[in-house]
Length: 428
Ligand code: EPZ
Image (cartoon, rainbow, N blue to C red):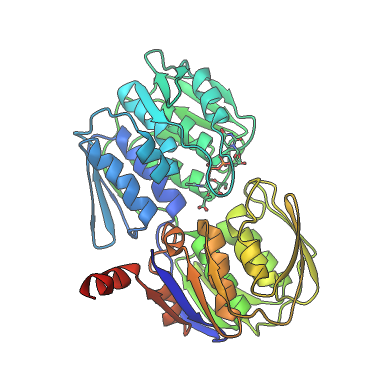
C-alpha cells in the first residue's frame, strides 16, 4: 500500500480545476444500465471507486472505458448478473444498482454491502421503497434477491432523506409505466444531477432538489454526452487545506451552490472568500477562529463528507469548537490520529469538542477511510515537521493523484509506492 511523506508548513497558492463529482458519477454509471445506447460522461477522473464501478459494468458484458477525461459507457449488451460479495465489498455503491437492475432486467441480486469504516450503512430504506413499487424481496444469508416482475409506479415516503435510497427509487421508476412520487427525497446536488442526466437520456424526472420528486416512466432511453456536476467535496477539501496552511487558491468549475454551507463556515473562521460565476477564490493567513457549533446533516446542512477535514482545521483554530455528526455513527475514527499529532479533541458519541492548539506536530499516521484520510493530509500539510500518512488507498477512492494537485499548490508531499519496496525486495 502506498504512503505519503509530507513536509508541513508550506502555504498553498495557485489554481485548481474541479472535475466530475465521485458521488455523481457513481449513480450515473448505475443509471447507464437503463440505457441501451452509448453514453459519454465528460470530465471524469479514474478514481478507484469509479474504476471499480466500471469493472462491474464490463463484467456484465457492457463496455466502459476512459478516453482521456471522457468515460464511455455502453450497456446495450449488458446481461443480468448477481452483484456478489466480492463486488459489494470492493465498492459499497454497487447497492445503487438495485434500482437500475430492476428497471432493466426486472430483477436484482445484490450481496449485502455491509457496514464500512464510518458506520453500519443499513439498506432498510432502499428495501422499503422498492417494496412500495411492487418488488418482492427475499433476503437470503448472502443476497438480497429482488423479484421485479410486478414492478409498478407508486408513492414512496422515505423515512429519512437517504441519498442512495432516493437515487435507487428514481432509477427503479425511470422505465416503469406511470407516475412515481418520492416524498422526503434527499436534496443533494448529486440528486439534481441524476435528474438532469436522466432527462438528457430522454427520461422524465422533475422536482429534484426539493422534498418531492416525480418520475414519469418512459419506454426507452437514448444515449447522450453529459458533464456531471463538479465535485463539491473535493472543492471543499482543497479550500480547507488552504485555510489551514494559509495562502490563496482559486478553484475553477466550482459547484458553488453545493458548497454554500462550507463557504459560510470557512468565512466565519476568518477566511476571505470571493465568487465570480463558477470561480471561487479563498485567501487565509492560517490563523483561524473557532466554529462554536458545527452540525452535519442532509443537504443543505453542512455535509458530513466535509466534517473530518474541517475538524482538522479547527484543531489549530483559536478557541473551542463543537462538531456534532448527525449522519453517520462512526465518523470520528481519524481523531485518534490527530491526537497523536497534538490535537486536543474530546469525543462524546457523535460529538467532538475541539480545543485549538497553536500547532500540530508531525507524526506517522494512518487513514482508515476516505474523508478521514483527507483530514490527516490536511493535518500533515500544516504540521511542524515531516509526517508519514499510511492508508493512501482510502484517499485514492475520492481524490485523483491528490499529491500532484497539492504539489502544484506548493505543498511538499510525495507518494511512496509500496511496489517500490516490493521491487527492491525482489532485486535484493
Ligand atoms: C451517500 O451515501 C454518499 N455516497 C456518502 O459519501 C455521503 O456521506 C452520504 O450520501 C450522505 O450525504 C455516495 O453518494 C456514493 P445515505 P449513502 O443513504 O447514500 C442511513 C463519501 O465520503 N441509512 O444518505 O449511503 C445511513 O446509515 C461518502 O463520499 C439508513 O439508515 O448515504 C446514514 O446514517 C461517504 N437506511 C444516513 O442514513 C438506509 O436504507 C445517510 O445515509 C440508508 C441509509
